[in-house]
Structures are given as C-alpha cells and as structure tokens.
Image 1 (cartoon, rainbow, N blue to C red):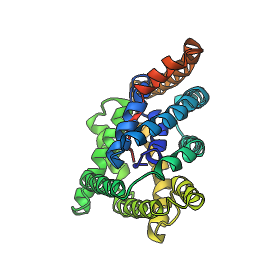
Image 2: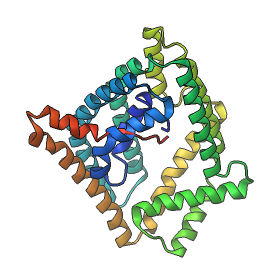
Image 3: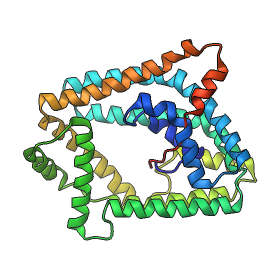
Image 4: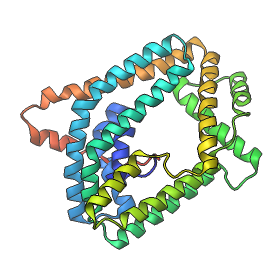
Length: 307
C-alpha cells in the first residue's frame, strides 16, 4: 500500500494503527492525510474542504467503531507472541490486518469516488509525477539497478531495520544468523517494482473513467481491494513462494530473540493496544461537543502513503 488520496488516504487510515507513537500520530491523521492527498493531487480549496469533511467522518467511525476491536485483536496477538510464534500465528496476523483494511475500504470507498470524480486533467498529471518520484525512491531503497549481491545487501539492511524496530538492538551474532536465514529467499523486489508501476498505470486509466460514476466506482473499489488481480504469472507464483518462506523466516527469527528482546516487542504491541483503547474511549469525554471533536479531527489526517 503506497498510494493514498482519499483513495490513497483510505489506505492510510489503516496504516495509522501501525505507525510508531499511535496516540501522537493518530490525532494528527487528518493533517497528515490532507497533506498527503495534496501532494498527490494538488487539490483546490473546495476539493480540500470536501476531502476534509469526508475524511473526518471516516476517522470518527474508525476511531470509535474500529479501534476498540483493534485493541482486542492486538491483545490476542500478544498472547500468541508470548508463547513463541508459529507460522499459523504470523499468517493470522497478516490475515487480520488484511481483513481490517478491507473494512476501511468498504466504508470509505464511496467518499473516495466522490472526491476523485472532481479531479482535473492537470491533477492526474501531478499524480503521475508523484508516482514517478515514489518509484525512484523504491528502486533506490532496494538497489534495483545493482547486481544480485547489492540487492541482497539492501534487502538485508531493510529487514534488520524492521526487526530492530520491534526488538531493539540485535547482536552481531543475531544479525549473521538472520542474514543466513534470509539468504535463500528469492529476491522479489524487482517484480514488486514492476507490479507497482502496473497498478499505478491501471489507476490512472481508471481515473479517465471518472465521469461515468457507476462503472468508475466499481473499478476503484476493485482496484483498492484486489491487489493480486492482474499480476504477471511470474510474480504471482514467486509471491506465493516467498510468502510461505517468509512465514518460516519470521518463526526462525523469533527463536533467536532474547527474553529482553521479546519483551520489547510485546511491550510495543501492548502500547498499541492501550493506545487504541485510550483513543476510542475519548468519545465519552467529547460527547455532545461535536465542534470540539471536529477541531481535534482537524488537527488530524493530512498525510501518509505507505505503500
């Protein structure tokens, strides 16, 4: 998930729960997402106003209807992590995030369509330029212009960073073992890059249909939900293989962790669960004060593209 506007912002609302400092980041969601939407589309004043109003409603629903459920989901995940991860546990996490993503898309897609139908041709050109910047960043991050060894080093660097983000510092011995575990997994980033660009081109083509709303709405909804549709046979096959191997990889990494590192990861999950509860509980404090809540939300969702 890397593109977000409202069609791209919808994707972000899901990603907010995964950001570090949820209690700090979530209340800034409207600001972050609004900024992001403007980066991709250079929205005009009326478009920004309409976007913000629709986003505020989506965020209010997400905050009070979804965050309590996220807390329950994360609490269950903590119980699984405390007993040592198995492949089915990691698959459960991934399936859970996918299901919650689909809920947000289904809730917000009609508003996304309403905003996207107002785009002018020059705003679609702005989108294409931003996609090109994103693609250059992706290629640079994974050293896609380099040889196999360089690309593997880039993949390892990113993977170690992601693991340490959850566990704290790894020892040199752990890093060496993780490198050995990652080595046999096929490189797939070059195919991801190709597929990203394919999906971006597809999205631009869908935007050309925006004045035929029923068909446009169906196509946007499908594009947001069916990430696998249209993949090349090579990428589809390798993606399935790599998914299975990565499940095994993370189980093996989990076995390498010290007690302190596991506690670090579990404490972070617990913080997310606690933040979800605290943020959703604020409804009572603001009940009957819609203006105050609107003001808080307006400090809220203006940027994010994960993609």
